[in-house]
Image (cartoon, rainbow, N blue to C red; front, side, top):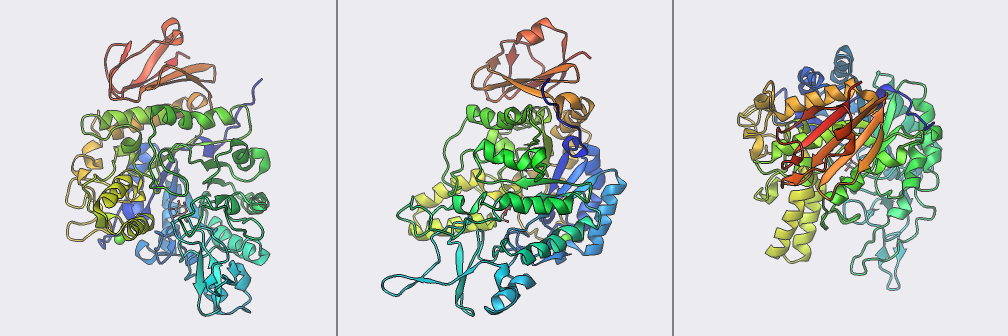
Length: 574
Ligand code: GLC
Ligand code: CA
């Protein structure tokens, strides 16, 4: 008897991710806020969402959009106050939904009181809460960094502190110093301030930021030189999945286990399946599930995101189904997602965003996601089919630190060469984080209903809002939004099948994605045409010979033919 997945609310719940700066501005200062989120809770509930995840809303100088936290127990002022957030938690619970927060504890902001103390002197009691190292010197007596690591934002991972004459480590921006997890007192301060404080206010779990970087490789050795022309080197293996990471996660889990909550960890740079299993096996008591980068990372070079490599439907299918296969017959659990605040839009990246195809493509992706096993995550705007900003988007519109750093590097290094710049812009048009961070498209008024027409939003709205917006789609029978509602209803109605079922891929050529699910004595079959061409469909014997009926589809055509981006889901009659 194969192992059955144990049923849990956080496996069945549909999660909707909100990016607070860009969701809804309630007081017309051009920045989204907590009151704006509260004003849209009924919209979210109507969609069929059970759990809301909010990207960081904590106090922060916003060097990395709130992933640089200066006080875990306070709120970014333009978003609101702790009381507003308490109201939000209550309002979510009143509607029968749950809410999780982002937990960003690999690093703090350089303006966090802990870091200000730590950097104030070498003898400060919090000196050891961050990772300080003396300089090295070369044979000519020039000061050098303690090692050659490159940060995740393409710059050296060390910054010199004039005051105390040492370097500190930061795996992201210089304004995001890494906490020293080796220091026990520091760890306990994190648990109290970042975790318990909010659990006590009744939240239902955490999305754990960059969860596998807390433990660094002892001695912080130089990384192998793989790019001799660069002054820094890719060093993931020295700061990812380090020797004490599982011990630290078990400690966190001890805190969490006092509450009925769940965690989903962000697990970058971990391609090895057995490494991932150590985090998500229930028995290991670490994380309930993780986000793997297999699918969303397609086309991006690890350590060099904007060096784009080609990928196709075969890659998409392989990566999207990888965890279906790996967790089967184990006690581990997985996530199903194609978008978040760090990625381009799924219709643009994995299907087609041209006007004649994009709605169809959005529905097709919804059917695939809605019938895969795992906890389903939807990102704001995905439900209406928001697409990437176009190639003609002016370069100044890119605001994300990653995009800005990259553009700066390209133009400095290549001496403002216009061909290099245009190549860089092509890469950004596909995979920049900015595409997910533009204002949510609520209606077709000047600022897409995100804020009043009179103010300038913190990021410009993308021109597509005139065709792609909530007001146009709500209640319109053939819209993507209404289609998503139907998909989510079906997912809940047949959760043994769609949430928990056993997955099996049927090979039908490069551009068709066909799979069955089995669960609760029923069988389903999902078929999707991932291409813009008409495809002949070899009807699987399962459909031909048994009593399968179509429960949802995005086109009406001949049975043995699939139109561009057509998708269908069949189930056996109960
Ligand atoms: C995660 C976040 C990303 C952030 C980084 C540093 O990858 O998703 O937005 O920049 O961690 O905290
Ligand atoms: Ca506002």
